[in-house]
Length: 157
Image (tube, rainbow, N blue to C red; front, side, top):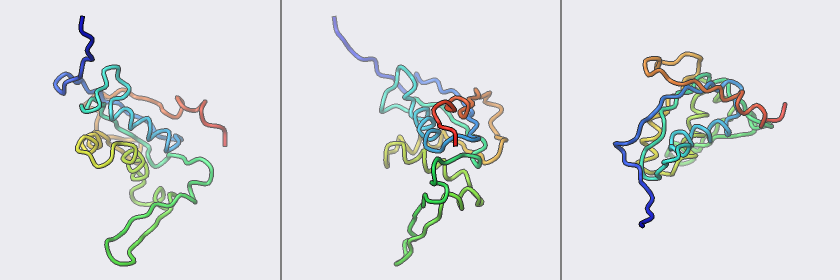
């Protein structure tokens, strides 16, 4: 009798669509949940080299929360490519700016495997909307209220 582990094949993957309401959700906890769903680690037949994750649609991304003083203390840096071109912006300014959904997008992106074709493909399955409306009604997504699900884990502030 042989003991083998069944490996999932890309043709056998059935992807679901889920909608997550990010209102009052903590950024890091929400990002780790989304990264797990994008990678497919919630499935019993998870295979590391196969894209077996779900499509994730996030609404109300502009209403996410930070714990502690991170809203004003957390700083995002980037470099323009020119000498002395280091730039910085706080989380508060990004959330109040033109593209508040980038906070959550970067948090999820940094939780996926680094610089791999599979991670880039999995990131294309993430759709983030700042407001309560999204454009994926036709896919009949399942709704997950993340804030209520994790409310018991976050201490009252």
